[in-house]
Length: 342
Image (cartoon, rainbow, N blue to C red; front, side):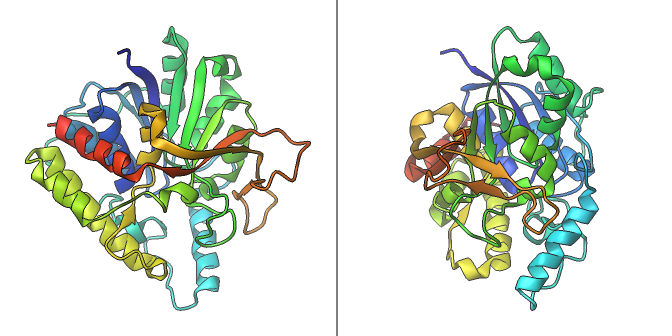
């Protein structure tokens, strides 16, 4: 069967790691490039993390292009300080992360703590930067490309603004981001869309078909200790690496968000946006609706305001919002993909 051509834009991140393993190990995707963005950590760390994962699983042939540290309009530092301050106001007992990188509370200092990758990694970033790499892949492709975005949407925002003549080459954007009805911090707020509100607005108003895998689905599709045991039982390098990283992520995530009472389960947010491209039938509940992005200069900047009740009949239904997936099938896909890697 012909592979689906994709570009993966990510900010690794433990869940981005799982997205990369799933994408490569599935054998169903033709990964033309991996591009990076600052989000879960600095651009230097997210890029190195992507290089480490791809090299470790045997995917050295996939080019990695580094993105930029700051969002399109605001600085990354300012957005992280604003997020930390707003969380502090809601939960006075919670101290802001000392690093200034909000993702460090979950992902650790490197953005992917919990596993020691070999220091000798010959894989290096491409000479092209992220947006140039995306444009090159689109320009040279004879068929439409699916963009899978699992981090802030800075690179996609620049791509749409700088290369509008290439947008017809984009089949769909499958993204992890946003939230419709699930409230984690504030209504409609999710980390990826918050980091770069202006880029998020550009993407959601681009007219490109969008499938949104937000908190409404990612906090329903959870892994547990059984998943980790299945990964470790594979007996290969990738299975052990993934098991170690997901164990670390589950512990730090559930400690940071203890009020969710997830027990021994945790989400793998970003892998959802990959799974739905590989096998659309894994999605069991998707609803088309109008989604608006706030950029008005408030604490709700970057909010994905979803008309899930269909009240705004005059506005276009511009996003397919995923609400649920076949959890067992999803987890089996993850394990099988890890087993197909080194």
